[in-house]
Image 1 (tube, rainbow, N blue to C red):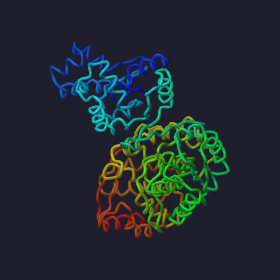
Image 2 (cartoon, rainbow, N blue to C red):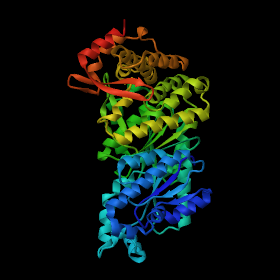
Image 3 (cartoon, one colour):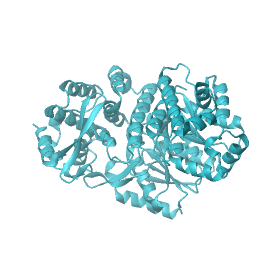
Length: 530
């Protein structure tokens, strides 16, 4: 447990009781935020409310949480913290907590909360003749803030020690949260966890459709299906033909047909077992079947783990237009089992490192240092290092997606290197270059264009190119059909009218978006061929 544990939730759900038990079991300090505030106030919270009002109390509560978040990274023994029911209502503060700590929301029925409030007293917000009505009103208002957590645990009718054991196991797994309101979920990263954790993420389902491909199915499908069967899940399987060239609406139609033939309903769940193509197609299938069913991601490649697994971008290609048809549809959960990645072909693994470099360049300069320092071990696929790269990459992407789920602004930075990269990938018919190789070349193009515009330091371009070469990735644009790729820029999904959103790197960990005139960008890309 490298991060603090925050127990969030409405008043009266048992945060203090459960928190103390978790802390005792883990031999960690326990902090009750309400007790700390009362100590600082020199009076009870109810008395402070009466004298100063809710606005003053919320300000003090936020300040206390800010203090706890500031001290968390320095703690050698991260504590268990029971936070006040309204402490994380401000979303910016909540996102900081999700990034800094493991947040578990405890939940119970409104009737039980109201009963406890009346019996115990001292609850200013529920000091009303209609405590139940007020409870329901506040729960509805706070629904999104409580949903944005690493996990949600029901406490109703369950012994505190049972709840504490469940919460402790969540804390040990150290999941990464993607905050998306009621559609929030976690990404779990580890080794040998895939089949074991899949049934819990699938949960109660009328049926399960495992979508995989002909490369992955013989290696991993049997173990997954046995695990689902042991948990009582009735499942079917659809095996795709591997390759980006098969990522199209015809393949989706075939999955729809299988869902219909097997009687899949709105309580069915799709599980994507495979690389980025399988992940994208499974998510899109789930988004469109009966107007949306749940899905779970179980990526088996480095590329899928660091990119396609997180963020809910799903879709298929439409001719030369990559991912032109799709939807934002968040999974119920994602399991990045590093053990599955060990069966990935060497070329695919190495090419996926381009996405890791891109992610580091966008939001994790320390990972960029790590890639340079440990390049030999990275290429050799040392499991501990691969796990760290996946975890760090997912964390960067989750942080960005949580702030901009549907790419209305900030999330666009994740497309660094993709404009020219996707065009080169399409020109090659999606089989001459792997996606990662295309992104490596796209990164070089973006950096070079940035240098020519005066926004990217030449030293940064040289540094990234050197790293890509060291990792075994292509960087020589003179060997690529850049002129032909320039003609495809008008098909890029980031286009708006005669403008196209382009991402430039300013420094390690600093990027910016610019809306470029398509004609200007077309001419600039063509010049890269010279």
